[in-house]
Length: 85
Image 1 (cartoon, rainbow, N blue to C red):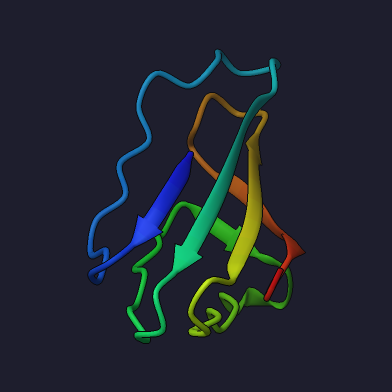
Image 2: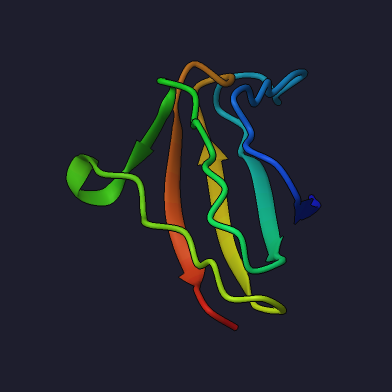
């Protein structure tokens, strides 16, 4: 998903994941306009270390994250692909 972050995102709903045992992979690209908007991640998303990353706020920059699930969408493991591109 390629997202122009122009306001805070308070809800992310992930629907129709692949069945358990099959990988569901999602890539988010957040593009920034210079304002520090927040993203509220669902509780089902698990970040390494248990803490969601701080988002970039620089105009014209982007952050890229990938999420994957192998349990039918019950939980997603999230990683930072890169930030401040």
